[in-house]
Amino acid sequence: MAILKILQYPDEKLHTVAIPVAQVTDKIRALIDDMAETMYAAPGIGLAATQVDVHERVIVIDTSEARDELLVLINPEIIASSGISDFEEGCLSVPGIYGKVQRAELVTVKALNAQGEPFVLDADGLLAVCIQHEMDHLAGKVFVEYWSRLKQARTLARLKKKLRSTM
Ligand code: GNR
Ligand code: NI
Image 1 (spheres, protein in one colour):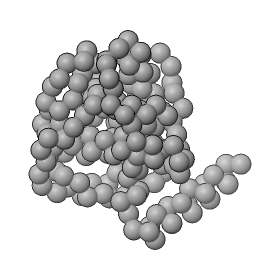
Image 2 (cartoon, rainbow, N blue to C red):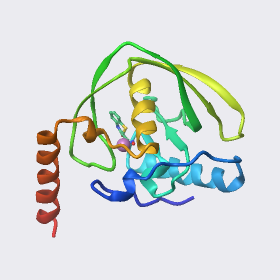
Image 3 (tube, protein in one colour):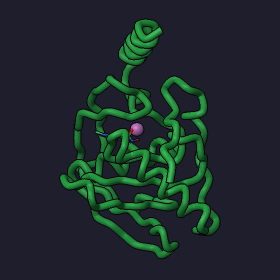
Image 4 (cartoon, rainbow, N blue to C red):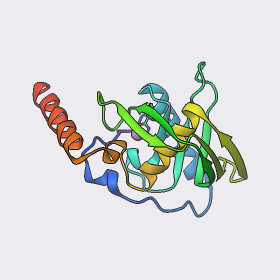
């Protein structure tokens, strides 16, 4: 296992669109192990392969209180969604920046598990938000890109200022 480097916004590589996993091999399972270790160490509640510069459709999530319920989503697809949620989000690729994003309140997602077996999951609350946030990463989208041009410009200015202060 290894802790992987997480790409930091505005890295252009975060805009890469991930391709579907053709076959769930030991190599993919090793990636999942490393992604889980990286997510738990960060700490975060989710991580998309895009964030560790691997552009295949793999996500790890753990929204449990005890941090002992790892959810693996390979080639995820949202097959149903309803309602509206307006949740305050953060992202390991945009540290220190938080803000609301409007998303579906309930989602039904179809995916493969780490054994390559298909399953269907109904999600609400934080889990539903997290699934949508991670699937956006796979599509090359970062949560701040839902915001107005002005708010995005202010976010970039804050990140640049923060970067300068650590040099
Ligand atoms: O750790 C994370 N917390 C979080 C909080 C609210 C909404 C979404 C998230 S996901 C984030 C980890 C991350 O960046 N995943 O891509
Ligand atoms: Ni994120």
